[in-house]
Length: 608
Image (cartoon, rainbow, N blue to C red; front, side, top):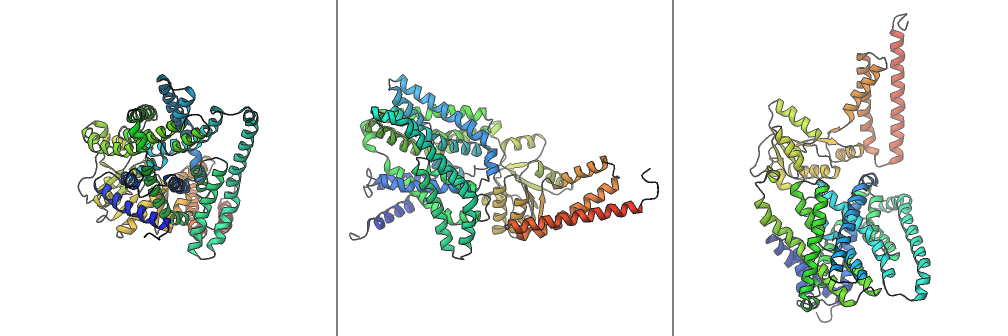
């Protein structure tokens, strides 16, 4: 292969290393991330030396993190993101500031200059978004309370990286002329940032959907895929141009498209690229570990890694207690956020360029961060194998997991307010149920009332099989999370076609998505209770009980028929609005006619 191009040789090396290392690592129970990192170490400059241009590869591989944040953004509608504003800016700022202050203070205690200590502490306070989200995805933690909390903190860290980088020129060695120009430069940078972010938001609202609609009409799937990648690359490039996080820009673009009718298509097109590039990123991190620095100063590196994990672990565990996360989720939550992050590479390299500290110090800190990223998945494995069995008999971890196959005819996924009513009705009729829920506190409360609820995520195929889905007649999908609900339905259709599905719909969009999947028995969670409240209001306004009941039943029938008419057009906003308006007019006219008929049928003197 001596005449083969470099890209072909490197691609062969990366793919070969991943194909060998990752399955071997997973077979040993170490997870895929350890496999990627180990592959990078083996083929990197300090292993077999098959790849030496590590920095360029690392920059390219960061695009995997960018794609991952874009896909996460697609799952978060703007209103849902707005609902997370408090944990993002509340717990996120508490984690970053708490860790940065303690790490800075610890460095200063050991005689480190305050400028170096401040930059080092700020950079080390950041965690690895790539590792944390990958681990949460593998463990199905994203829908749990600890997963949502970790995601909120990681999102704030991406935002916090911006002022950290802006701080570096103020701490570095600058000339008098540069000091005079600094305020003007910072003002221009701020204006550029505002303009770019505003352009992304306005463009996402006004231009992206029409563009995607136009591309989709071409009926060329490969062009739609190219457009998807172009969209992410373009927005990431804009953010990079003004010094912002590429991942943050991609996440923002994903949120803007979360309500688009092309969301699923975008996810399907980008998912394969994300997985491969994210794996390449972990390989690049493994290659970037400078064992020369580690061998030259092993004591310093070990002290930094140990201090980093210990201080961040204490702060994050204290936050987990303050946030009242379930007891059994706190260790994993702590370990996910305790390691250093990929953005620390950027911070420390920029700090060396701004002469805040020397290149040797930057290499030492970068090496420590890389080692912490390598150690973190190993600590998670140790936690699973060594600590969990010891705590298995403690009250708060004594959760009933399905260990033997169940044979109840009804499987209920979710034991919240909705699932409880269904389960109680079945049990009252003598129909046995297998109930699954992943909220530990809910399970403890249910057990205290004598209910048998198993701990587990119903979107896992192995868990559904053990719960008896292969032989059950009915599956009730009563989980609160929309994405998880749809995932469970897709899983049931693919592997248990005999199951009849009864599903809870959170809102109209969720109802339509369930109907798209062929689920015919869908109930909107607030609809019936709202109708009963409306009946009560009518009675209080002077309507008779029978008349109020008839009006409510008429409204219910009309609403169900209207939904059936709306469903074929719910992706076409203009057509949908027209159908809704027409249906509302028909209902108002029908109700008016009935009121007039009742008034004519009343005997003379009724109103007197």
